[in-house]
Structures are given as C-alpha cells and as structure tokens.
Length: 622
Ligand code: ADP
Ligand code: MG
Image 1 (spheres, protein in one colour):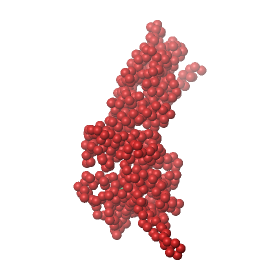
Image 2: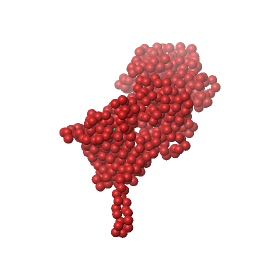
Image 3: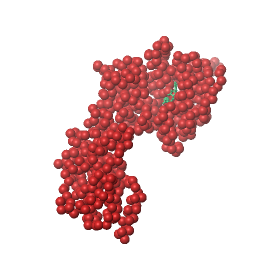
Image 4: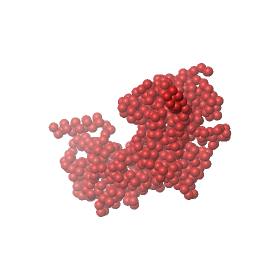
C-alpha cells in the first residue's frame, strides 16, 4: 500500500459542502439520484469509447449499476463499471470545481441559508450531495485501460485523502457511511422507492443486491435460509426511443426530474420520432423555472446528443440555438457516424436538419402555451427575455418569435402581443411605435408619449436590456414597420402640428440663449407644439442603432447628443421668453434639460450643478 496523500478541498467546495450538510435537509434522498446519474454518465462515456477508441475496442463491456447496502454497518454502496478516474481526475473532479460559472455562482451565494439552499437545489447538487446523508465517503476507482486503482476518502470537512488500492475491473464504487439519522437509506424498500421515483429511465440496468432470509420446515425442523438476491430495479429503456403510447405523463415528469436534476415538474414536453430520409428521435422539455445559469456566458447546454442510443456529448451549445438554451432534452440520431468530432458536428447537414426541425417544434409548443394567458405569463416571466434574443440570431423564425413576444404599452396595464397592437391601431397609423428605456416607471412618464397619445396611438414600452440590442434591427412585423418613437425621424413622420411662424419669431431670442447656455450638451433646441411638459429630449434612430451595434461588439459608444424640444404653450416658457436676465435664463435652460434627462433616464450627471442652479433660481423668486 502506498503512502496516503492528504489534500484540501477548494474553498468553493467547502462552501458547497457546508451548505449540503447544514441546510439541505428537505429533500435528502436526491443524493442517490445524483450518484446514479454520475454512474450513468460514466457508463455513457465508456460505451462511446468502446465503439470509437481502438485501445478499448476489445474490452468486454456489459454496462450496469450495482447498489448494495449493509443495515448493521449503515453503509450504502453505488458501483458502476464505467469509465473510472485516474488519480489526477479524482483530484480535479472530486476536489475542485472547474467551471468558472459554478464558481462565481457559489461566490454569489448570499449566506442566507434558506435562499441559498433553494438555489443550490436548482443548480444540481452532484457528487457532494453524498455528504447530506453520510459522514464518511469512500470512492474506489479504476480508469478503463489503466492498471492503477485509487481510493479517495473524506468526511467532508475540509480534507480528503487519496491512496492506491487494488480493484479488479474498471469503474467506480462509492460507499457511504450513513449518519445515524439517515441510516434508513440502508434498506431495501427505501432504495427501491427512490430508484423507482428518480432513476426509472436511466438507460442502463440498475441492480440491487440484498440478502433474503427465508424459513423452511416446521417446529423443530424450522431452518433459516439466507439467499443472495440480485434484482433489477428499472426498465433501463431509453424513454426517448419508446412509443408515446407506452408512456404516461408521470414517466415524462420523472425522467425530466432525473435528467435535468430539477425537482420542479417540467412545464411542457415535446416527444417526436422522425422516420424517412432521416431517422431520429427527440425529446425536449420546457422547464417551469429558469435554470440558474440562463444569463451566464458559460451556461451549460441542456441538450444531450446520442447516436443510436450511444451518448455522444452534452457539451455542444449548437444543438439548439442559444435563445432556446432553457430547453432540456435529447437528440438521438440514427444517421450520424459514431465518431463525429466537434468540428464535424458544427457543419453537419444531418444535424442542421434535425436542429431546424427541432426549433420549429419547440416554437410550435410555445405557441400552444401562448393560447392560455395564465400559463403563458408563467412561461414568459421565465424565458421571455431569452426568446427575444432569437430576433437577431434566427432570421428564419423571426416572424414566429415576434408573435410570441409580449410588451407593456402606453395604453393598458398588463402586456400585449404585436398582433393585438396592430388590431388596435386606429385608422391612419402606419407604424408600430416603441420606446426603450431604463425601467417601466420612467417610460410611462416619458413626455414623448404625449405626442402619440394626442393622436390616439399606442406606444410599446420596452425596458429589458436586450430590447436595445434587438428591437432597432427588427424592421417590420407583419408588413408594418416598427419605429423608435423617440427618434426625431419618427416624430417628423408623425406629422406634428407646425408651430405658428409668429410664435416661432417670439421665441427666437429665448432659443438662442438656451442654445448658448447648453452649448455642447445638446444637438439643437427646437420649439414644439405637442408636449404637455415644458421640455423633452429626442434622439435619432440611426444613432440608436449604431450605439447598440457598438455595445454588441463590446465597445463603449460615444455619448449621444440629443435635441431638446421646448413646449411653446407652456406657461414657464411663455413667461421666460421676455426675460433678459442672462444668468436666470442659463440656469433655467440647464434645469429644464436636467429634468427632461431625469424623466428619460432616471438620473443626471452633475447633481451638484443641478442643485446650485435650482437654489439660485429659488432665491430669485423669493
Ligand atoms: P457533474 O456530474 O455535474 O459533472 P458531479 O459533482 O456530480 O458533477 O460530479 C463531478 C465529476 O466527478 C463528474 O463530472 C465526473 O467527472 C466525476 N465523477 C463522479 N462520479 C463518477 C463516477 N461514478 N465515475 C466516473 N467519474 C465520476
Ligand atoms: Mg453529476
């Protein structure tokens, strides 16, 4: 026996373990689901290698998962004959978290145990969940094709130890030394129930070994006979290959829970089998709750690719377009070669075909959800923002996606579709109008809306970050152009009432002094007839598009200068136009600009200057 080597867990693992041990007691039994799922992954990996790697081609491989327990010793063992791990892999996989997304996710946990445990549950608890029920875990493992085997031992308190050991066959065996209060997991009924509940559709057989005690004979001749039993607990069928008729809703739900490591039920599923020139099966799920990493750059793909039931990859983000990254499920093709490389996958025609058909099916199912307002609200609150991203990446389905979007509007509470918007358009309205801003409150208060309200036009209010990226590029919906309502081109087209020439003349002096006072801050100062507030800022559409493009490319766009419109009918300006006090005119020009800016964005740049000018002005009125 070689020397034992002590290692310390990475900080984030300790944090995770601490949470597992102290806060996640509500649903402890999922540890078994997680360990079986790891065993199944290990079988998937070896299965693939035996078919593609010449070194492993001759390996006799009969994939299986074996469970056993000892009631007296309070132990539970999960064993697989899958890929196994080398010493380096043990350290990397069971001592550190490699994915930066998971790391930053853990770093962002609040420390509030209740909140954190809900999050942790959502993100899939994995191997470390063993420590929810065990105070010691021993892992024995041997990598397929290697000679050496290793033991990993830990009590989950900061350290683990690795040493060499002897193990006959490849694979991994994990033994849990159960805590006293969790010793019930070392029982036949408990294990059977949990496996039925969570792992029925693991596509490899799961066996349970136990000893059955029987009695034979009567009276004095009565004899106790112990018999070793080995019972298969699951049907071990790939559910996506089964016929829909043989599956109940419960089957899909349970499969989803174990597949997606999610305790909430899926919102919908789409199961299809395609036969013809191409042959494949797909099973997709729309979750009820967004996965925690939905908005992370390094989100994990939710779709697994199989070829003739052999697992190929779960790490290909191109299997579905990014805007459908919340979808979970399986694609299983009969036509792809087994040894497809990642590069080949990217440009593979068969896969492109499957992908395009899958997108249609998923969008179709979302359309179905949209028929029920209540259900769709639930869907939309979770995935609406992501769906919008499809507007600039999936040109082919743009119209479909547009139909699925919902927006707040200047006319009504709640949200509406573009279709409804169009139906409500009064005669003469030629475009669909929208404004984009920081938040809904600000948008509702925007002076720009007044101009449209006067004509009876509705304006869509958009405050998602992604709106600024996608909306200016949409162009049109159902042959009606979509236009930024705050752009000067749009406002011109709106056909505002012209300001009377005489009135214009009377404001000339004031406008000149405003322009002088504001200088470089504004593009221009002009007179308007269609405001009810004293002033508003308007931009131009071309600029807005360019800014969004620059942001998309990761550049900080230059500050966009806007035109300040002032209200020719407002008493403030009426009174101001005959004043000569240069200082007062300058202060008020800045105050009007600042309040228009506040209405537009909720903040101003120079608060000190604003306060000084306000105080100055107040003083003059006293
Ligand atoms: P995940 O399964 O999401 O990667 P886990 O915490 O469940 O996270 O497992 C961590 C890693 O440990 C796995 O990715 C895998 O590399 C390794 N591992 C765990 N269990 C096994 C096993 N039975 N056989 C081989 N490798 C395993
Ligand atoms: Mg896992």
